[in-house]
Amino acid sequence: MYDAVADDYCYPGTTVLKNKLDLRNPEELHSFEAEVSDARADEELPAGKLDFAHFKAVHEHLFQDVYDWAGKIRTVRMSKGGNPFCFPENIEDQAKLLFAQLKQDKFLAGLEPEAFAEKAAHFLSELNVIHAFREGNGRAQLSFFLLLADRAGHPIDLKDLDPYAFLNAMIAAFDGDEAPLAA
Image (cartoon, rainbow, N blue to C red; front, side, top):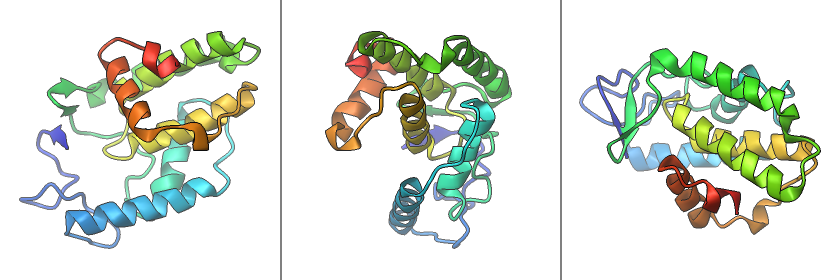
């Protein structure tokens, strides 16, 4: 569960995000969101330049059926487990810096697998800390990363990905240890 202050994204008096179907039950919303975003992830993702605009387009693609704000930068401060994410007023600038570094690194193309894994882990870790959207960051990050890895010549097969190990690796990276994520 995320911690958010003065969260206009939610129905008054609840932690349920306002959504296009006006679902007020959190379990129903969660199920609908997962089903729809999974289906959208199986479609061809938007083309782009692997920049922040492209990342936002991926989020919009995944959540366009669920939220009016899909693909738009969040406007509330958030944290998880007491750990704050990037303040909304800094998201744009921090994302520009991160994606400029990715471009400078030639989108991680031409790297040996170990170097790719290390740079990709750092990129994903920083993108997670930015946490650009009110919801759906992890799914957007993973979908975008699959595009990045494919274009870099290191395609990822999700059948090999253990979701719990991946989540724990993302948490460790948030705490400064990117090694499990690289692994």
